[in-house]
Each structure stands twice: as structure tokens, then as C-alpha cells.
Amino acid sequence: MIKKGIELLLDFIYPKRCLLCDELYDTDYTGILCDDCRTQKIHYNRIVERKINLHYVDECHGLFLYEEPVSRAIVALKFNNRPDKGKGFGSLMAEYVKRNIPEYKQAVITDVPLGKKRKRERRYNQSSILAKQMAKELGTEFLKNTVIRIRETKAQSTLGSRRRIENIKDCFYVVDPAKVKGRIVIIADDVVTTGSTLNELAKELKKAGAKKVIGIAAATSDVP
Ligand SMILES: [Zn+2]
Image (cartoon, rainbow, N blue to C red; front, top):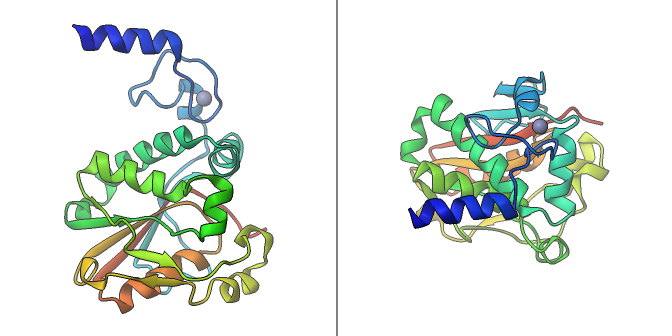
């Protein structure tokens, strides 16, 4: 009774807004998207194919196409201090995993580590928020500080596909290989474009003994 009262009060103070378009809405079955956004063609919801660099990634899945209004929500998550957007995408990603990746019950989940400088600028790692939310809803382990970024890199979005591979090369390090050895590892990321970052991280996880690496991204985008 008290819990219900608190929920009603919170709904009053913070009325629910759609993750993607920010419109106030009643609620759909997920409580995350408005009906308009749920029925738009921006849903991708399938295995990402033909990405340039996914040799070490066994499967890569994407939820949306990186276009309006998804792109705006992701930009808000990455650059405008909106970690709440990460929780919304993370919940949708968990919902997708439950339906499409049955191995998740044996898997562990990792983020894509950010360098210290970039993390300071953004205040948080957007991919950690996605990964933590997924882990919470799936009841799987989140690998905290198991992989780190050992050098700063330029933002991949500023580079073409060839330079993305060089930029990201050997920048990850698995601190605690015992955590991934023989395991299925799911990497949560915001956007997959060429797949270079995901592939580089998967390479290190495989070197550390991971049995299988599955990537899942909130959105998938073409190389600019
Ligand atoms: Zn909407």
C-alpha cells in the first residue's frame, strides 16, 4: 500500500516520458516506449551482419537503427548527462536477450571500458550503465573492472573505418582472466558502426580464455 503510494507520487513528480522521443505517455507494456516509437521502423532487433571487423565476435545483435529519434536519445546518454537513457536502453536490451539469446543464463556481462579522461568528461561510462542494467534484469554477473582501457584513444566517430582499427588496437587489457576463462561473455555497447571496438575487446577476451563472445548494441549504424 505504502509502496503503491510512493510510486504514484513519483509518477506525479516525474511523469513517464518515452525513452526515445521524450513525449509524455500513458505506458506501453514495457513502460519504456510510447506507442508511436514502438511501432516505428527504427527497430532492427536482429543479428548484425556484414560489419567490417567482427572476426573475434561470435554474434553481434542490434536493437535499433541509429537514426532519429534513437540517435538523439543516444547522444543525450553519451554527451548530455542523461544516464536514465542508459537504463531504458539497458532494459530493452535485457528484454531482447531473454527472447533471442538463451545462453545468457550461463553468460557474464561486460561493458566497453572508457579511458579515465573520457570518463571524467562524461561523468560515467554509458556502456557500463547499459551492462549493469542488463545484468540486473537478467540476473547475470556484471564484470566490474575485469577489463580496462590501457591507453586513451581518439573518439571512433571522428575516424574512417581503416583508422578506427589502428586507433583502437591493443587498448584493452583483461586484468582478471579467471573471470572470463571458459565463459560466454556478452559485451554491451551503445552503437556498433564498423565493429572495430567490439572486435578489439573480443580479441582480448578470447586471449584470456573466453569461450564465446556476443556483442549487443542499442543501435547499429553505417560507416559515415
Ligand atoms: Zn516515443
